[in-house]
Amino acid sequence: MAIVKEFKDFISRGNVVDLAVGVIIGAAFGKIVSSLVTDIIMPPVGMLLAGVNFEDLKYVLKEAVGKTPAVSINYGMFINAVIDFLIVAFCIFMVVKGINSMKKPEEVVVVSEPEPTAEELLLTQIRDLLAKGK
Image 1 (cartoon, rainbow, N blue to C red):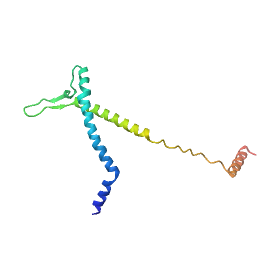
Image 2 (cartoon, rainbow, N blue to C red):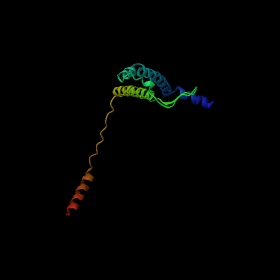
Image 3 (tube, rainbow, N blue to C red):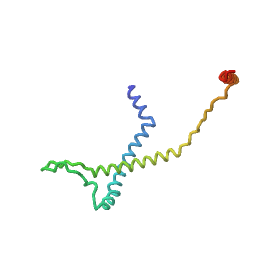
């Protein structure tokens, strides 16, 4: 029963719930960005590049034979995934930047060296006189 209580304590922490919400929202946001790239951004880019459909860009290693599908390197889909990543990374960057700008700046504590005591000043004078050879 101790493991059940430990698990309950773990789940009821705010960090776990926040993480779960973040993952769910992130997954939904990823789908939106993928649709944005695939359905809105890439068609005009492909049109500007002589009607290229990036999803169809691939290098065929082995042609399809009968029911066996072709073996290919789908670099067009990879380009879409890279653009997806860049958009998501930029959005996350902007969110973090916004959150950081709302935080109060931390006070900078300047630590200065303490003033030398009378004894330290006397010893310094004695050292200097001995160095001069008096």
